[in-house]
Length: 157
Ligand SMILES: [Ca+2]
Ligand SMILES: [Ca+2]
Image (tube, rainbow, N blue to C red; front, side):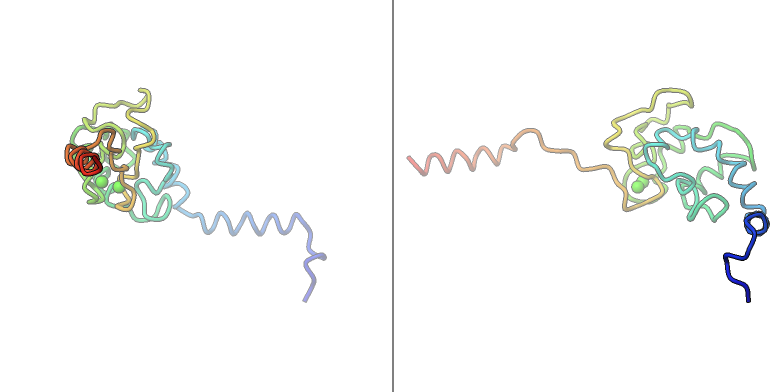
């Protein structure tokens, strides 16, 4: 058996290229063919899930529920606009927030090329039920809080 030092770099490159092409097979073409859909979703870049916005484990893997909901609106490799009020109104991952609420466009009126809608800090993944917009922060005290404060001040006098 020969040591690694004895192998030519050109041979190693050829082996790596051959194995890479063989293992990529149809997946590479599939992933590249539909990579154009990411920019057709508002705030897809902010979500940061890449192909997993629609797929379980990278381009070419089975679709998650959001991906299945998108798939229902397009043809194979079709370039139809699929971000619509209908898709925005669905809650694909069942977390209680619609796809539009998670992606900053509750009405589903954003179009590719428009500025990213909504508050970037509230953008979450419509395919991940663990990813949800943060609860709104209370900015005013509730009346019951003021009643308790008054009672404490009154008790102190
Ligand atoms: Ca959701
Ligand atoms: Ca979610």
